Image 1 (tube, rainbow, N blue to C red):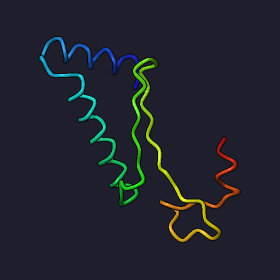
Image 2: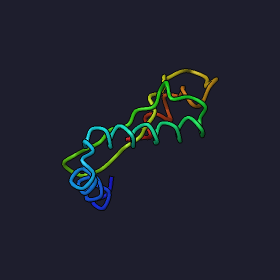
Image 3: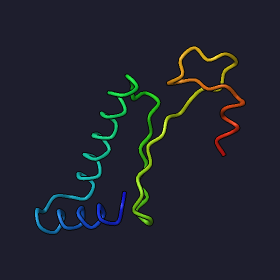
Image 4: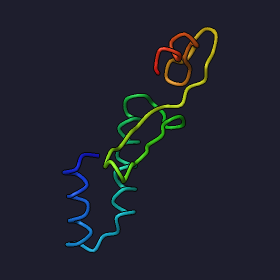
Length: 84
């Protein structure tokens, strides 16, 4: 979440009286809906908000396997090790 987005959320809280939790939950649901549209599921999707840095992260949890059958939910060990 950019600082502009954080400012917009704070402005909505102040002007509209909407709780910050409700706004963040709505953003989370929208991100998960977009993830589901692209990947067909949200079972392995995770959305995290970092209030200190105003960043939002969306990622998928995957099972490490020997021979990927479903690339949305599975990953080879070698590929997983390359992501750090």
